[in-house]
Image 1 (spheres, rainbow, N blue to C red):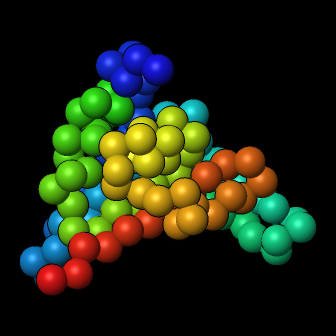
Image 2 (cartoon, rainbow, N blue to C red):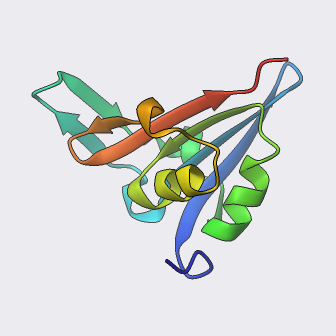
Length: 106
């Protein structure tokens, strides 16, 4: 996978000394993901996710400096997993769309 050619939305939120990074695959922004079987409705809210449109390579660099992260989409979640930032067991699949979060605790 060429991480330079795939784009994701990255928004950095600073709150209470924490750096919260929200990242979603470009095509998911503003979409509702519904999994009736699991009873989950997930809205990929532009207010939370729409920041800069960056390559996955750039997004992973920022993600490595996050204290909290919220990721949605096959491209970004797989890249985070491949870079050792997310464990497979921490991924929630909503329909076939992966969602993952992490927090660094000090």
